[in-house]
Image (cartoon, rainbow, N blue to C red; front, top):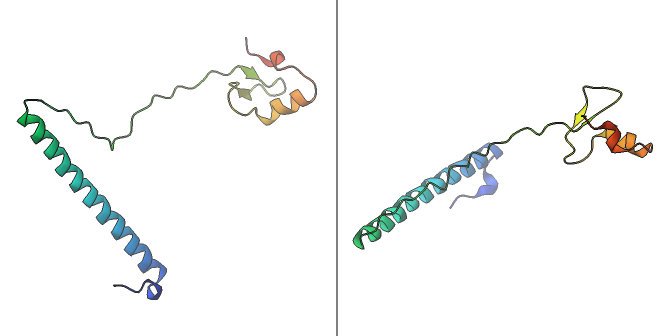
Length: 105
Protein backbone atom coordinates (compact mmCIF):
# COMPACT_ATOMS: atom_id res chain seq x y z
CA UNK A 1 0.00 0.00 0.00
CA UNK A 2 1.22 3.48 -0.82
CA UNK A 3 1.88 6.01 1.92
CA UNK A 4 0.05 9.02 0.50
CA UNK A 5 1.61 11.38 3.04
CA UNK A 6 5.00 10.92 1.36
CA UNK A 7 3.75 11.83 -2.14
CA UNK A 8 4.02 15.31 -3.62
CA UNK A 9 0.90 17.17 -4.71
CA UNK A 10 1.62 16.34 -8.36
CA UNK A 11 2.07 12.65 -7.51
CA UNK A 12 -1.17 12.64 -5.51
CA UNK A 13 -3.04 14.26 -8.41
CA UNK A 14 -1.61 11.62 -10.77
CA UNK A 15 -2.82 8.85 -8.42
CA UNK A 16 -6.29 10.42 -8.33
CA UNK A 17 -6.40 10.83 -12.12
CA UNK A 18 -5.29 7.23 -12.68
CA UNK A 19 -7.82 5.93 -10.14
CA UNK A 20 -10.67 7.90 -11.76
CA UNK A 21 -9.69 6.60 -15.19
CA UNK A 22 -9.51 2.99 -13.92
CA UNK A 23 -12.90 3.36 -12.21
CA UNK A 24 -14.54 4.73 -15.38
CA UNK A 25 -13.07 1.91 -17.46
CA UNK A 26 -14.30 -0.69 -14.96
CA UNK A 27 -17.79 0.85 -14.86
CA UNK A 28 -17.93 0.96 -18.68
CA UNK A 29 -16.84 -2.67 -18.89
CA UNK A 30 -19.40 -3.74 -16.27
CA UNK A 31 -22.12 -1.82 -18.12
CA UNK A 32 -21.26 -3.60 -21.37
CA UNK A 33 -21.44 -6.98 -19.59
CA UNK A 34 -24.83 -6.20 -18.05
CA UNK A 35 -26.23 -4.97 -21.38
CA UNK A 36 -25.01 -8.16 -23.06
CA UNK A 37 -26.70 -10.26 -20.33
CA UNK A 38 -29.97 -8.32 -20.72
CA UNK A 39 -29.95 -8.80 -24.49
CA UNK A 40 -29.15 -12.50 -24.10
CA UNK A 41 -32.01 -13.00 -21.62
CA UNK A 42 -34.40 -11.05 -23.83
CA UNK A 43 -33.44 -13.13 -26.87
CA UNK A 44 -33.98 -16.34 -24.88
CA UNK A 45 -37.65 -15.42 -24.40
CA UNK A 46 -38.13 -14.03 -27.90
CA UNK A 47 -38.05 -10.34 -27.02
CA UNK A 48 -35.91 -7.65 -28.60
CA UNK A 49 -34.44 -4.93 -26.42
CA UNK A 50 -33.29 -1.49 -27.51
CA UNK A 51 -30.99 0.05 -24.90
CA UNK A 52 -30.21 3.73 -25.20
CA UNK A 53 -26.87 5.06 -24.03
CA UNK A 54 -27.52 6.89 -20.76
CA UNK A 55 -24.14 8.62 -20.84
CA UNK A 56 -25.13 10.98 -23.63
CA UNK A 57 -26.38 14.35 -22.57
CA UNK A 58 -29.73 15.32 -24.01
CA UNK A 59 -29.47 18.12 -26.47
CA UNK A 60 -31.79 20.77 -25.17
CA UNK A 61 -32.64 23.49 -27.56
CA UNK A 62 -32.38 26.75 -25.72
CA UNK A 63 -34.11 29.61 -27.39
CA UNK A 64 -33.36 33.15 -26.44
CA UNK A 65 -36.26 34.98 -24.83
CA UNK A 66 -37.26 38.28 -26.38
CA UNK A 67 -36.72 41.40 -24.31
CA UNK A 68 -39.85 42.82 -22.67
CA UNK A 69 -38.37 45.91 -21.04
CA UNK A 70 -35.93 48.61 -22.21
CA UNK A 71 -33.96 51.07 -20.12
CA UNK A 72 -35.24 54.58 -20.98
CA UNK A 73 -31.78 56.06 -20.31
CA UNK A 74 -29.84 53.56 -22.43
CA UNK A 75 -31.78 51.72 -25.13
CA UNK A 76 -29.04 49.08 -25.42
CA UNK A 77 -29.99 47.75 -21.97
CA UNK A 78 -32.95 45.38 -22.05
CA UNK A 79 -34.48 42.73 -19.82
CA UNK A 80 -36.64 39.73 -20.66
CA UNK A 81 -38.59 39.99 -17.42
CA UNK A 82 -37.25 36.65 -16.24
CA UNK A 83 -34.96 36.09 -13.32
CA UNK A 84 -33.54 38.79 -11.12
CA UNK A 85 -34.22 42.31 -12.37
CA UNK A 86 -31.11 44.11 -13.61
CA UNK A 87 -29.71 46.92 -11.51
CA UNK A 88 -31.10 49.64 -13.80
CA UNK A 89 -34.63 48.23 -13.41
CA UNK A 90 -34.25 47.88 -9.64
CA UNK A 91 -33.13 51.52 -9.40
CA UNK A 92 -36.09 52.75 -11.47
CA UNK A 93 -38.57 50.73 -9.41
CA UNK A 94 -36.98 52.00 -6.18
CA UNK A 95 -37.48 55.56 -7.47
CA UNK A 96 -41.23 54.88 -7.64
CA UNK A 97 -41.52 54.16 -11.37
CA UNK A 98 -43.81 51.41 -12.67
CA UNK A 99 -42.39 48.48 -14.61
CA UNK A 100 -45.08 48.82 -17.30
CA UNK A 101 -43.57 52.19 -18.34
CA UNK A 102 -40.57 50.37 -19.80
CA UNK A 103 -42.36 47.66 -21.78
CA UNK A 104 -41.25 47.25 -25.35
CA UNK A 105 -44.30 47.48 -27.58
